[in-house]
Length: 512
Image (cartoon, rainbow, N blue to C red):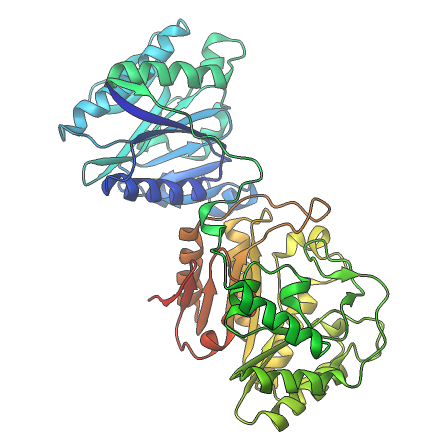
């Protein structure tokens, strides 16, 4: 018998599941993996297949948005269907060896029929119509797509789903179609975990499989794409000693940047001025919080000397937030820019600034020094600000970017993913940034520095970062670095001169 790997994704956003499916299909086509059977539930979502359109909705798209129901056009057959909590969705990633997709589809439906029979329900088939019915009401929908004989998408069985959700659509193009669920027909609770086990057993029997080891998440272990190779530790040690000799701090060290060893090995760093203690308590950031240091008048020159000694062609300067200073530290930024220009002719200067509480005179001081790139990170979507950046304001940060753009500067910003933001929220934030004049953009994976920081909600797949890079490129951003390990100033010089959309999945290359 053939072996198949069983993977239970639990509750997973449909868009995430779709990205993962495409990745698994590509791996199966290349023969790198076994066949796989994916079990999943989705938050409320409406999907429209190749035969469908918005006409298959019974409500306006805006109503779906109000109910926080996402909408996706997909490459499976069929028209509109609904997925939601209590519905078992099964995605077989299977290479159909005899190339008979119709026979495979029949076995898949027979599997669901066996499950229903185990719960004393009588499954019904309708000629020419895919799916399964009980007492004339549809209980399971099916929609497959096939690439190079490997299946994608699959079947959805209503276990304990509220049939009222289906009133939002014309189910599978049938206006009079009635929808039911197992718990409704049994008139009692049904445990979806038990249904999953029953389904897996019948599927393996129907298709001649033996279940392999289940794929389980390993607590505390990061995905492979977030594991970096060890750098040249001697080069890292040299850089650290050089910075210590010049009495300089870097955000690389203070913020626990995952790229620190790589950048230090290459002889680059992002200098952090105005001390190492921040006056704000953002819940995502590893920089020290507490009483700030007094202003160091010699700091700007030491940064300039470091830029010269390191032979940098692009210098990046950031700071802690200094709400205690009348100008928020704007004067120190301006002096640092001027001294780098004075001692290092031809070096481009990028600054990553706090919001200066939206103070126009402070921003004027910085803008007058004419940095080559003006960067201020938006960090996350507006809904999450209260929990992630409680002392910051989304609109104020947009105003900082907009003001720098109005002064003729090249504007850059950055966004973290993995904090619980939705696809629509990400897209809206990108649009806000573009309207504010932002032309350069970084998008990276949020990683909680400790258990005391705001928790990470999910690992974002490399393929999704690539998708967001492409999306931002179509919006008109001139350069985009997007990937799990991308940070605000990672390869900043390359990005400034890229002249096109780029993304980073442990490497940097153009797309589009």
